Length: 111
Length: 113
Image (cartoon, rainbow over all chains, first blue to last red; front, side, top):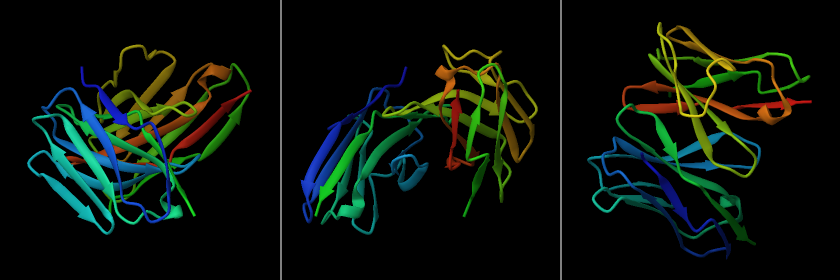
């Protein structure tokens, strides 16, 4: 059974810092991994999608990497801003395409 | 881009009543849709997989008689919470599969009084 864990559970940083969010999964047989952002009381915003054959994806200040063999993904946020404050979720899609979500990292960027 | 809508966005109901939530793929056909539930300060938990024209597949611990799922067309899946109770209050999110990708709806917040 696939299990997805995110570390840290919460993170508070001053504005401008570069930061790394971690996601680990137990079953390396995945189709893809996706990083989402969720603001309080809101739905999901897709940030980056990495297919199983890819090693990384980049969008603006965000970079996500995937190492299937070790069951890890990282989301790198450069030059963090207060507007980046949100909960970040990683989700892994396996054989039936259903997503298993991680536990989330609550990020707060202080002005 | 692929868009998924949900209706209603929020609903308040009395204990014992039933509530129906719709999930629509607006610009693509989705043979498979998924329903998730999110309790406060928790992550999303998959409830069931909905396949067009066939019975839904429920995850372990999810009562199929309480959470009725109908996927009558390639663009619409509905989730009906029957005899709702306060513990069913949650954020319900659907997603629709297109190829190897999934697109998520904006969610429906259910409050049962």
